[in-house]
Length: 183
Image (cartoon, rainbow, N blue to C red; front, side):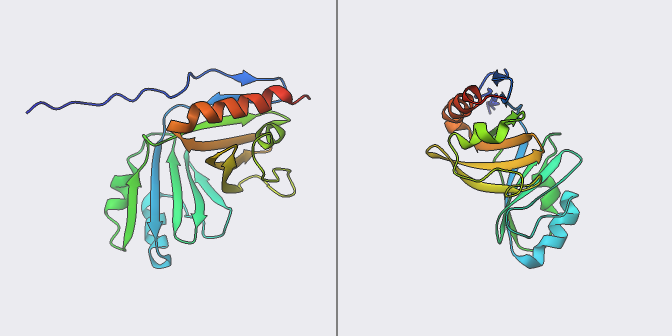
């Protein structure tokens, strides 16, 4: 039997663009997991995944290169920068849950700089000012006409997650916003 192995190509070149006040960088491929589970499975899944799944709206948790975004009362997106097989970690959990590897569906951009929030706000309606969107906060929202997840990673760094089929559009929107802002 002939087996074919798909090769993942990057949706965007890994180059930095933008201005001195905000830069946009496409991120390298990471492992991503879409997770759905009821409240009674959260503790077991957290133990298996090695980080506490956030249980409050608009929150995230991260540990050792792995981050979990709360997307709904029973929904999370997990990202692992180290390439860990999170499906295997969830396989031993007995409590009812649904885990789907979405590594090939999603991609992400890092928007960084003193005006990173303003660059994103050129196409996103969220209030990304520090008092409304502190470090660690995440939200599913829109950027122009596409759905994205925005996570405030640090005081001047945001992670913007989107479906890879929309990556050229997202990069264009983010680059336009980053080019328009000034220090």
